[in-house]
Length: 567
Ligand SMILES: NC(=O)c1ccc[n+]([C@@H]2O[C@H](COP(=O)([O-])OP(=O)(O)OC[C@H]3O[C@@H](n4cnc5c(N)ncnc54)[C@H](O)[C@@H]3O)[C@@H](O)[C@H]2O)c1
Ligand SMILES: O=C(O)C[C@H](O)C(=O)O
Ligand SMILES: [Mg+2]
Image (cartoon, rainbow, N blue to C red):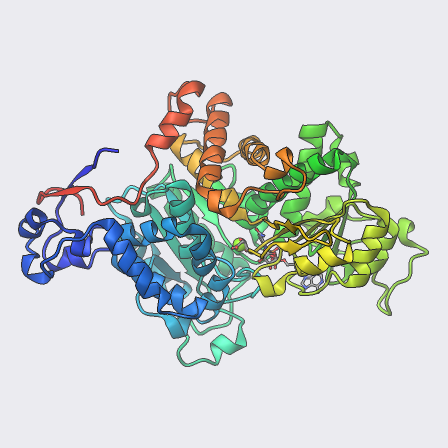
């Protein structure tokens, strides 16, 4: 690959403190002169490889994952090329450091680890100056992707006030090649109901109860309208909103802008791909599955809808018949009619079971039907957890499931790892190695009764969302349609190792996540072209090359000083 040349307007101390342009010891002698930093750097000029070796040695000096996370965060603040190159070279080892599970610890300690601001903080008491604050950071910038979070439901660790959007956008760059200078991470700080944070004098967010209702809606709307006005072609990615807002905001804006909710749509898509792979192993169809979903929040509903749509589009099942293949449980047990509107959100309506089916089934003292009873009656072939309830899939539940199903498909998806509904090794042991497993965070392989190892797939939305977003963005699609998501999902499923060998993992390895997300992006962009949503004039055959050309790579390139160049 030939080295790109950049005309850069930033010089002197400013270029050394710009994470976008800083090369540290890799500035050449001519560049040091041209940018006025000869005296600011030690003599030796390093290659990027040498810098990566040094950075990796320094990283190794930190023992705990959290300290490694902090070290890498500082590196991101200093030098993007070095940060993304280093992680790209040690992807499998370092993704769990910057993403799940370590990010959960980093976010819950955000105020104590805080060193340098990143992205944009829009805080409710400053709502009147929101447009000025927004433009201050974005004017004259081309922005392709905005990741926004109000941090109400961060992974499974709940309300964190300020948090996750920066990790999610870094994953877009690492796994899909999104240009980091064209991404913006936004925190909408509307307060927090987390008492620990409110009582912490070091808490950096707005120390106020979480604002809800009309005032919240107006605040979010003001932000979305700014995005639409100033960056009409950007993709707006919603992350970790609370269960009462995630689906609602998606529905509100999906016809008006290219919006994507990762917890609903990204999780639904990766889980559909995983189930497509699993039914390949069991030689059945998705439409034949009986699916129990434990935890009917954003992820649970997103998964149910995506699998239901998969049954319809892939196997031709009528939507109503497809709905009947699902049993959802939440904190009040099985979602059934008699729970009433207080306990059943309106968006769950299509999956509510009728009481008559459950009349003779034992309940607890509150009349709720628990997971074990549901498993006994339904005899599910698929059991999915997105409840944040660690250990909910007990030995009794798993053994009961395995009694009725030759190869139980079990996906404990709650993150981080400590919140998983069952440890994969336990599920493996309790099913005598028969379970087909995938988890939300990375786990080591299971030891099988026959002495072999079973690789537990990581069913995390990062295996697909970067590609979905990048595909839509490169094709300049006006929206990210359900059909584009299905196209990406099918492409991901087609890459599953289990399709070639049923003893292999249900999804591709995270070490291959960049290649996998590239394939997803190509499929999504092809679909956008085919369905007439693309804003580019590409033939389908040229999509692959065009998507590849637009990927940002962590290489320094040559710099020429130009006062009118890029900043
Ligand atoms: N693997 C992935 O890619 C992925 C993607 C999204 C979410 N998740 C994980 O799934 C979990 C849920 O995320 P979400 O965004 O849906 O959150 P959410 O808050 O929208 O939903 C959680 C749901 O679980 C229910 N719940 C809580 N305790 C329960 C219990 N004891 N029994 C049954 N239900 C219970 C809640 O009432 C809520 O409806 C989190 O741990 C998150 O990290 C994983
Ligand atoms: O962030 C992740 O690891 C996946 C998912 O979006 C989650 O909320 O758990
Ligand atoms: Mg999430």
